[in-house]
Amino acid sequence: FFSHIMGKELEEGVELTLDFAKLKKVANCGVDVIPVVAQHAETKDILVVAYANELALNETLKTRIATFWSTSRNELWVKGLTSGDYLDLVDVRVNCEQNSLLYRVLPKQKGACHTKDATGQTRKTCYYRRIGPDGKMEFISEDEL
Image (cartoon, rainbow, N blue to C red; front, side, top):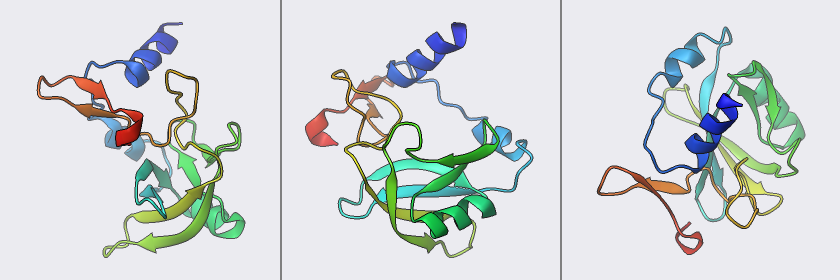
């Protein structure tokens, strides 16, 4: 129950509680991974940042659906498998140091985030809040996304 409330506050609240220990947790997950940015191929919006290992990358290339490695569950994560919000792969780009990837994708439905907005619709992107001048987060209006 407590973790559900904390998750809800984390995902829907306006109190800034950034997880600066995230990369330490990723490093301790026991699997070699690199960061992946999923970008909408047409709008150029950043949809989600996740991680991939070799298996996730191979699945992505084979199925043409964005697939990641869940560092919290230590398992393959096919984006959209449970929600239907698949991200169809356009291409995969590699950065200069070959230590991160860019998945250029097209959402199969309207959203990409696992969270829902006030109307119950899947959010288009995981980046739906910004840090305001007071240091608190504020929700970004739908037309600004």
